[in-house]
Image 1 (cartoon, one colour):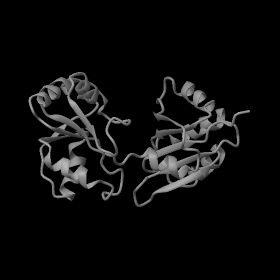
Image 2: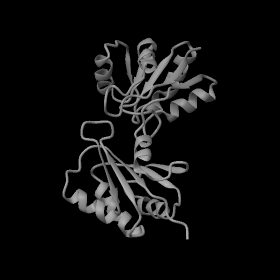
Image 3: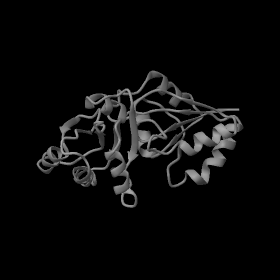
Image 4: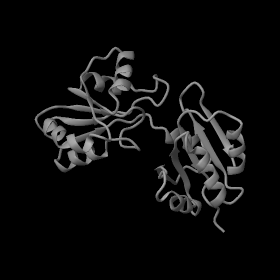
Length: 225
């Protein structure tokens, strides 16, 4: 029987990958990639030649059983997403769960993920925190933010550049005025930026500065009375 190896890939700087990850990407029978074009660029950068199989949120339900059968027959697959660790707000969970159900070995390498550097750099307590992933686009969004407003632990979430201002406006509506927030943009890339302040202060900042890149938002926990 083969196995599934979950391989984190760089979230920005291509140097943010381990030697072990590069070896696995080279030695696996094939690489399951969220976007084969993105992964091809990474492999070419490190002069790695391997077969790429498209595995993303639009086809994972259809091919997960086939992949499990192929691993059972002896194939070892490396699973990657476009950036960071697969299954963390990216495809991967379904295949990992299916492999575990079939008693297939699943190995997850340590490596890059966006929320950890954002959490540490925020300056908020890290010993306990809540990871919320992406906020809902519409249905359930306000309810989720109201729940975050009452959370006493540090909260980490992802947001797109198209909705970051909407999120900050909603934070302003439901958070206490002095509740601190750290917005981390383009982590590990050339224009990495961390802006800290209240919702009001962050709204003012992004009204006067470009809103580009990937965002990780870290919210200070509500102070207990």
